[in-house]
Amino acid sequence: MGYLKNIKCPIFNAEGLKPKDLPPIEEYYIEIGGNTDKAGKYLLKDFLSNFERRVVNCRLTSVSRFSVRANWGGVLWSDFIKWIGDVNYKYVYFESYGKYVTVVHREDLSNERILICDEVEGEPLEFTYGGPIRMVIPNLWGYKSCKWLKRIFFIDEYIVGFWESRGYDDRGLIEPCVLLDVNTGNFKKIKGGEVLDF
Image (cartoon, rainbow, N blue to C red; front, side, top):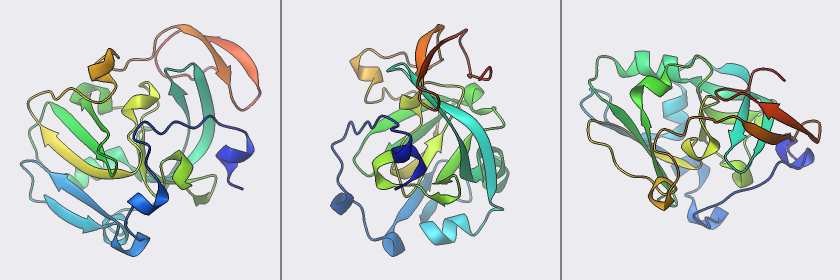
């Protein structure tokens, strides 16, 4: 049993995606799009081979009012951007294998803890929680952290995403509220923005 399941982290699967809907891991690819020399499709293993592996301790916080802290492993977004090189964009479009879409403003992607994540607590990320690879954007509500990642496109025109089209905020900035700390089972008050106090 994986770490997130062991601590009873809630599960969300807006697309109703099933493991059979994903290609075999050796055929799983990520597509990069936009005005960049790195545009194209990359098998997951080839994509990951371009980067030094990093581990980030941070919280993933859901608009459903829970937050979970873990050691997430994968590719730092800042390392990915360095690899991409000089590219002009206003937004980043993320799409899953289940066609879930969310778009993140460029200025919200400067957080040093943002990760393209394929591990949690040293173990492969389980399908249930977005594996084999997902985004972890700790400074935004969890619906901006696309699971089952398939596409990362650099764009200039905003595209309304899955939850955003249903009334959720386009920016996805974490608001002050009381939420469940999954790690301890306690309810805690947060002041808004990335949860750093516990």
